[in-house]
Image (cartoon, rainbow, N blue to C red; front, side):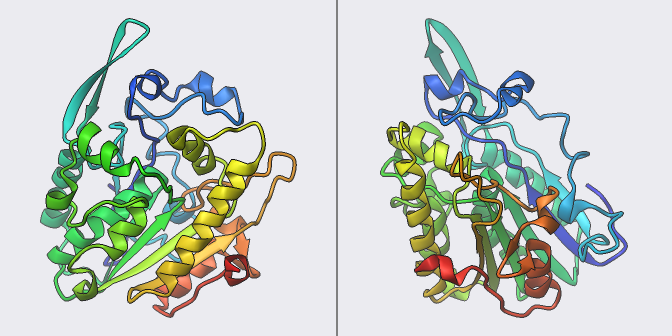
Length: 321
């Protein structure tokens, strides 16, 4: 937690991957796995302990020394993550990989609720409140924004989901069978093939929630495309799995944009690595916060317009066709 000079609050959910079976549980993210660099096949899937890099390494929106950062004076509560369950699990699983047990505490839900209880006890009568998350935390921002909205009743809540979106027929199995999330009861919606889109559109109370949804993706996300391949058992010998994910993401953004929600998006192919056919994963707390652009505006400028100025702005419309 970092106290700011303003009366605004940012609740930031950490990313950190996910695991759902013996293979993925046996391959946590380590310093060595980071040194391996990019390969089409994922070599590591999730943080199995809270990394020392967070939250001290957070930049971008969390940089209080950057005079150009519109959020530099905000109070920030950072919710770490090492449970491999998109922050929604409620179980401990022991997987067996090559004859050896691998235990994972999928305890994301209790961690989040305890964190939010602390937030609600310590931050009252805020001027602006934004629930934000990157990668795994991007799903969490969508899952828990209604809880935050219920506490700050009558107040407009901003929900930023950065680097999010995977389509799979396996979502219900993962959430409710593997992670024991009890989604209908605890998340307030039934899961289809896109758990992020479902979180926004399938909640029975979605129309009555005073939430402005902000959604950002790069078109060929170098992390989500590989998770999609692993989750859906897609071949990776060509780049077809990347294009399939990109097309699905653009289609989802288009559906959300045409829905009843107060929704604005930032979609970009900025920084496309032609050789790999990839783009950056997340933008919010890194150098890409100010570097990455869509339609000539940076991600930071887009976010300022939507939250600080409270105007409606979506960027990257050309990528939806």
